[in-house]
Length: 120
Image (tube, rainbow, N blue to C red):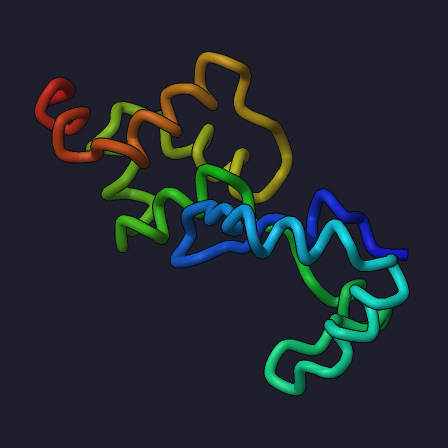
């Protein structure tokens, strides 16, 4: 069935968007079957099939931040003081950034120019 926690959040331009209280109340009043029926009736936003889901690949946080900024791996690594090999390992899921690195990536995403100014 559908995970109600997922259906209650909508991604809007990469930022989490909360539903209004009225929309949440309407959604809470629906059964899982009604939610699924409503999702299937939206031709512009059909749920993915199991086959399509298996074809999808997860994008790392580091790659997402870098692509959002429109930077190459070399430019991103140089601008933010991250070794290029480390960045590539993160992006290719060979390793995961530790907690400090995850926090650093979040700060870069939120204020890239300020961070870049501090590194230079």
